[in-house]
Length: 314
Image (tube, rainbow, N blue to C red; front, top):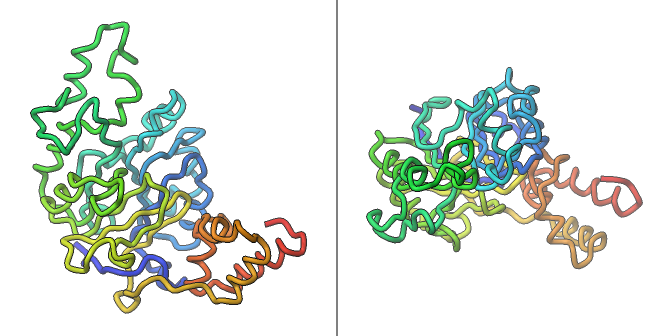
């Protein structure tokens, strides 16, 4: 197993990103261009998609341009069961066996555990004892349903992205893992769950990476966790990515973009400046303009702003 190296997710040079073994991508919601562009540029050994893929065609078709360049893994999110196409294009694709949900797989030298989906209180609220769960497993829910209530002779499509106690406890009894990827967030997040922390600690995971909340978060760097926490946690925004491992020499808080760039952005966007700075952009490999500029790409962001200001299309 490779050592886990903590790092700052926002202040990285292109050379450092090109050395990344793993890349974790936030919720695509049907837009895979940032992931494809990042793989083509940085060539990681493997990538993990953190749920809410909502592929508009079978996943192996959408990702065909990079399947010979990297290994692809994923966990599902709550929106991957919104419609029949959302479900079929993921779970019916040729990459369906790359779902990490409920198991541990060695990927690029790391043991990676996956927990897809979300907690739904009508099935199980993990803040309550498991004995109080309405249904321990998907099979238990199916057996409670009349045949006409079933979807494809199983549980409702919506609940195929529900975390059942059986799923959670199977992972809880698993051998140790280096990394835990989840759709739900850990407890430090305002909408996170202590159950995610407990799972990570039981597995001995040193790194937790999640999607779902559409924010790029370095929990230690932003003061939401202490450096003494048993694991390092990161959230990954939709359209963005987290490259791993990181350079320990770069273990700092995210840098600010240059002030002249911030002033230019304010001239161009006015009250919408922060919205633009914090929105991932495909021309920036799926990174936000703020993060890209802070990591050394200020000239490219400045050029984009100048083009917009003078009538260019970006």
